[in-house]
Length: 102
Image 1: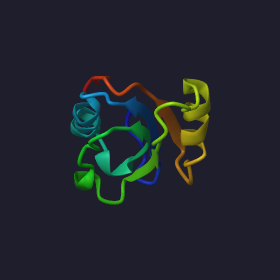
Image 2: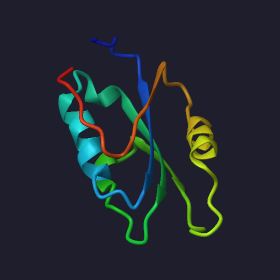
Image 3: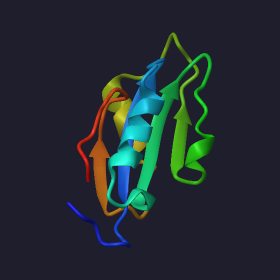
Image 4: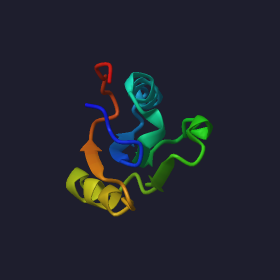
């Protein structure tokens, strides 16, 4: 599916110590027809946070630091949805997802 240049997609990803998160994000960008239209919303919990600097201003992050009393996945996904701004489309995925081209 090809998106119009002004149509953005918000990709929601919760990740707790998932070693495949960066690979998932890069795969999404590499296989997208219009990677400039992708905005990532993450809820993360890492002792050693991955480097997201390659995303520049294409990312919103919620950081979970309480390992003992963290909310459940439904609440986390809801928190990520609150980061949506002007994106036309919403895609919720896991931190270990692979994509087809375009």
